[in-house]
Amino acid sequence: MVNQRVILFDGVCNFCSFWVNFAIKRDRKKKLKFAPLQGEAANNLLPQHNINPASLSSVVFIDKEKAYTQSSAAIRICKHLDGGWKLLYGLIIIPKFIRDFIYNIIARNRYKWFGKKESCMVPTQELRERFLD
Image (cartoon, rainbow, N blue to C red; front, side, top):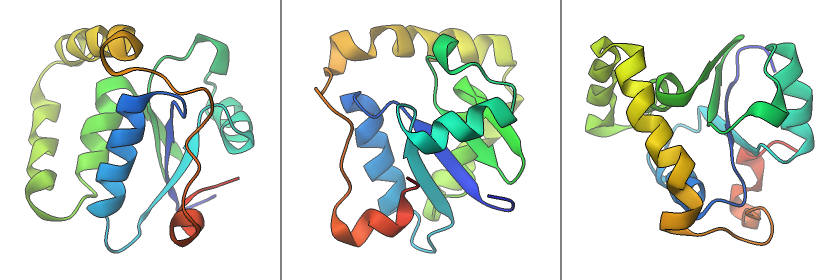
C-alpha cells in the first residue's frame, strides 16, 4: 500500500457513495483507490495509522503513508481530482476546528438527510480494479 492514495468511506451511506462515484469520474488517471470502512482493507489500514475504526464517523484519506480524517481528508482528496476541483484545496487555510465543525454537522446527519443502504456499495466490474478488498 506504500505510495498509494486510498479513500476509506462509509459503504452504506448514500451521501458517501455519491462522493465516491463523483471522485471516480474526476480521477481519470486512476490515482485513487477506494475501500469501504466496513471492509477488510479498512480493518488492516486503520490500525496502521492509529485510527480506531469503532470511533470513526469520517472519511479517511491515506495519501501514501499519512492518514487524514474529516475535512482534511475531503479537502486533500480534491487536490487529486481532475479539473478545477483542485482549487478547493485552498480551503485548507481555514482553521481545522471551523472546517471540522461544519464537516461534523454533515457527518452526524448524513443518514437522516441522504439515507442508508442495507449493504456496502458493490462496484461494477469495470470499477473493480479501483477498489481494495
